[in-house]
Image 1 (cartoon, helix red, strand yellow):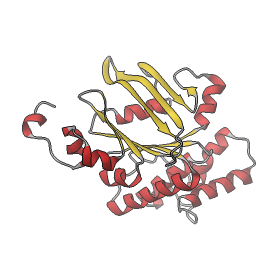
Image 2 (tube, rainbow, N blue to C red):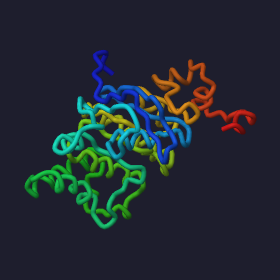
Image 3 (cartoon, helix red, strand yellow):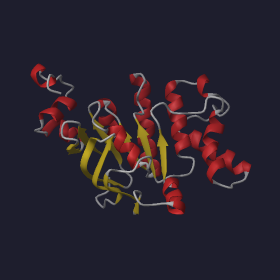
Image 4 (cartoon, rainbow, N blue to C red):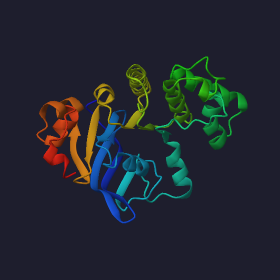
Length: 260
């Protein structure tokens, strides 16, 4: 990462909850342009909740989220459409349309949000598939390729409109260690070659150590951030017992586990 960091996402005083129950409170952090930023933590800590708010699916209970200078808690109409064009999202399952080929899946955002000629949309879709190593698989249906390839196709679709940042929800979920490692390398290659910002939700330690420039760690007990920084530094130097247990993959003591 460059020493001259520039925030592309800024979160201040964020809070979220469902049905009157607080999940996250008073969350503040920044994501710098061009970095791979990982949101991690134990089950039920609010990782996916935070991601859904970052991409504008829900309105925060409190606070503000700025995406590249737009306050997405306030944008409407054409401004909101402009914001949505800046981001791409890959959901945990990949969420490809099973009845459409990979090329058709990647073309879909171009058909919905641009007025490009047919030939141009097809060319762009082919280029995006090639970027994730899927050239030659354009006519395959999702069911005809592996889980790892489906995740890469979903990333290609998320890149169709040339977004400034990609949000990935548990990209390694359901993948074997080798396939997961290959996906990590795809993420790193795209981030470095395209200077693209990635925000990744995961609890897979191997992936975290491989791809993350910085992380924040959420904690359901405090409903907030209990650690931030480079994962290797948190692993080796954090004084928080829960952070230490997470990064060293240690079980909680029986007495502590009983209170959670």
